[in-house]
Image (cartoon, rainbow, N blue to C red; front, side, top):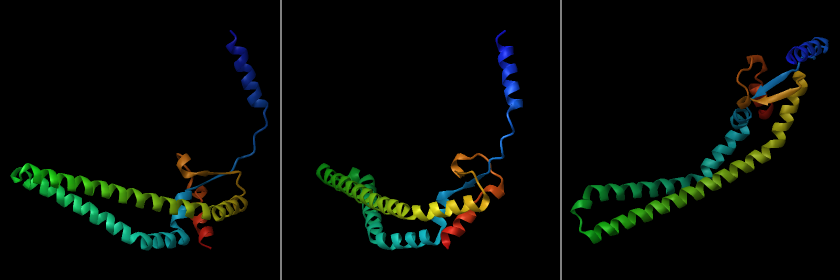
Length: 165
């Protein structure tokens, strides 16, 4: 009984409300635009150069651990117990060394990337504001939050152009 008056009121409200002006929404893939920019590519090359030695050390340690494990698996049955225990201890030590090196490298690289993102933020914000002004947008959403967007409203390429200036 109560439903009918409520429904009638809602319909009346909807019909009497003036049509809301069209909201213009753009979509950008910030990550793609930022990491495809010339500045980001130069940053990546420098990062690769700066950490190539550490990456080589991590790979070398990983290879040494793998070789110890293979030797233990292949020859372990023929070794006496003390030799097998010594080899197992060496393997565990290499694994721990690998994990520590990898964790330190990953942490350092992540910190450098975060610094790059923080430094790039003002440029990204300015480029996004230019897009808002040029296209008379009310809102720009990140592409991760959007299920579908018309190709002409995906402004990622234009954002990349602005970042590369």
